[in-house]
Amino acid sequence: MAPRVGQPGLWGPLLPGLLLVAAALSRPASPCPFQCYCFGSPKLLLRCASGAELRQPPRDVPPDARNLTIVGANLTVLRAAAFAGGDADGEEAAAAAVRLPLLTALRLTHNNIEVVEDGAFDGLPSLAALDLSHNPLRALGGGAFRGLPELRSLQLNHALVRGGPALLDALDAALAPLAELQLLGLAGNALSRLPPAALRLPRLEQLDAHLNSLVGLDPDELRALEHDGDRPGPRLLLADNPLRCGCAVRPLLAWLRNATERVPDARRLRCAAPRALLDRPLLGLDETRLRCADGDPNGRRDEVDVPGPELEASYVFFGLVLALIGLIFLMVLYLNRRGIQRWMRNLREACRDQMEGYHYRYEQDADPRRAPAPAAPASSRATSPGSGL
Image 1 (cartoon, rainbow, N blue to C red):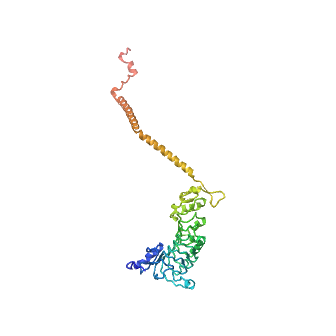
Image 2 (spheres, rainbow, N blue to C red):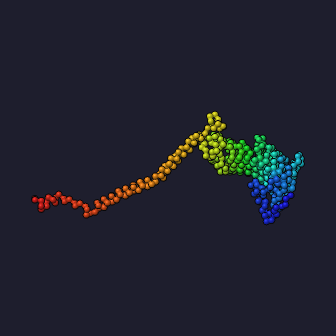
Image 3 (tube, helix red, strand yellow):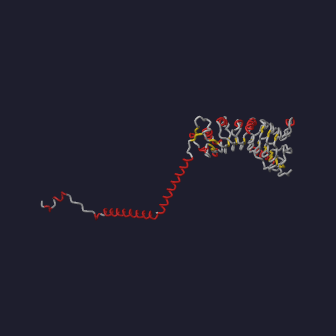
């Protein structure tokens, strides 16, 4: 056994609240080395022990433990009441007493767990966060989580790849009784559909389904994600799924545009098919251009009214030609800059000479001494003395 690494002090009264926060985030309260198991309680901040040869849950965890982390063990099978002393078969498992009544966070990652039997977590009435990620599960009992009335967070990331359709059906049954579940992690499981039971959970706030094999969401799944009265629907993580952006994706696209805040990674969604839309952002598509081929309402043979690769290449070539012409024009201007300057100078001088001529004429016309004498009236010429009349 490793020595204690912390002693209670002024932080003792605050530790239960901190552990509850850690449980809600589904992370261990403190780091635990690989091939070890660690637990914490109000009296003991953290204690770690070697778990390399551990084949069943440890029995030296104190009854007042609030969190337990087991990493790198070889548990393989979690039998009924495995954490309450019921590792044996039959009546002993059924009669196992509650040994860890205050445990709120249980992390069991990288433990080679293949089978989780019915009632594996019986005897943990206060458990709020359970993490079974990175285990090669191939069998899950329909009542595996039946004894967890307070469970808020369940992480099954990279844990359901080997089970196939039968495991997904068992997951549906196992999720059904989790009425208080708020966070569900199903990332990296090659899921081709979302578990229906997960969409029916009344208090679910976030469903992590990124890095799976989802090609889209059907109308039934979208209806299940809608608001239910005053309760908002759950947030959904969908990035890194091979979405097929044919006509069948139009309901999902319309739903995303009306509820973008419900999918935090919506801007990361990319099309994987058809080829004309490969790696296009889903939110950048025009719904009116997504059409199904005649007689194919399922959208397996899509017709997409978008510019093809050849047309896009011609646009690029045309742009390059225009850029080359502009570059040549700028080079000609630069090479003839002196001639252009000389021409501009001559033009400016010619304009100045013309303006000076106009100015000189205006001054001549405005001088009264140079103005011509006005002509005498005809009547005065007729009555003058020298006229001979």
